[in-house]
Amino acid sequence: MELTSKNAAIAAVEALENKKAEEITVIDISKVSPLADYFIICNGNNRNQVQALSDHVEETLGRMGFDRRPIEGYENANWILLDYHDVIIHIFDKENRSFYDIERIWRDGTKIEIEELKA
Image (tube, rainbow, N blue to C red; front, side, top):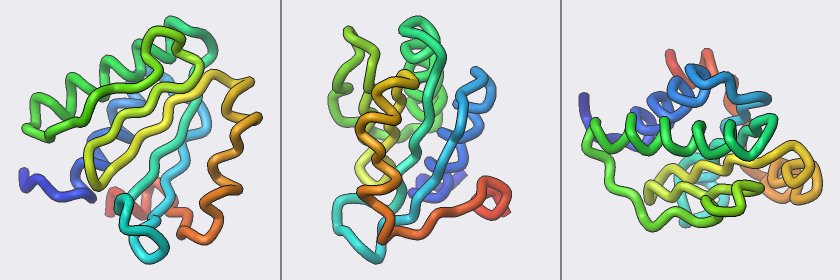
C-alpha cells in the first residue's frame, strides 16, 4: 500500500472503528491550511478506551510504515493528539470533545463521509 495521506486516513479510521470509537469525523483541511490534509476526530467513553484507541491507531499506522511525531496527551487521556504529518488524529473523552469543539473551529474544511473517504 502506498504511503499517502488518504491511505493513512483510511487506516486510522478503520483502526478507530475496530475499537468502537464514537462519532468519527473526517475533515479535509488541505485547502484551508498547510498544517495537514486531514483531521480525524473521535471520542471514547473513558480514559482506558481513549488510550486503547490511540494505541490501536499507532500500532496500525506504524506497521504500515507511517511516521509519527511525539504523542501528546496520552497520560491524561482526555485529549490525545496523534500527528502523522498530513493526518492529525484527535481522540477525546466526551466532555473535552464538546468543550473544544474542533469541528466548529475547522468548519472551513470539508467534512468527508467515511464511505466517501474509503471509495
